[in-house]
Length: 161
Ligand SMILES: Nc1nc2c(ncn2[C@@H]2O[C@H](COP(=O)(O)OP(=O)(O)OP(=O)(O)O)[C@@H](O)[C@H]2O)c(=O)[nH]1
Ligand SMILES: [Mg+2]
Image (tube, rainbow, N blue to C red; front, side):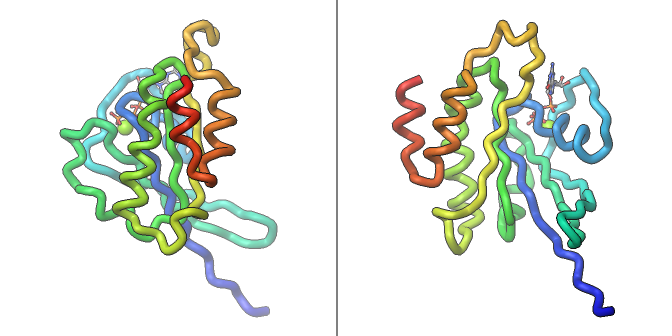
């Protein structure tokens, strides 16, 4: 039986400092969560094997620094990305508004061959905080944003928040 090559998929996680990028990656890969905040310095990756149908993939998940002063590695590692996860904190509107900047910066630096169809995932984190009472970014707004993202109409939505 012919063996098929395992595919490597490179995923970049971007978003403001403190939105929970490192926590998400650790939870997804190691199933561990810590309440302690330790700012990411530079960037680092973890890998995870996933099976989709009968194919095995290795996800190389890059966690990046949200704080500008810690973005010491530059953004050279954006290149060759297969997907970009844009993370915001549902309790911090600013972190949602900043998603466009992260997206634009990513497209600029990664310069994917087909930017209009590049897969982005928008992820609203920290929905548990204060039992949801501190939430400032609604599910509706996020859904609109995600739907309009490929149409390049997202700026309009952001301006209406
Ligand atoms: N309540 C709650 N706290 C969270 C959640 N995700 C992360 N946190 C906390 O939020 C803080 C920041 O999380 P990090 O994962 O370090 O944030 P980050 O986006 O990696 O931040 P930078 O590395 O500075 O870019 C930590 O104290 C986490 O414990 C969540 O879903 N719910
Ligand atoms: Mg981090």
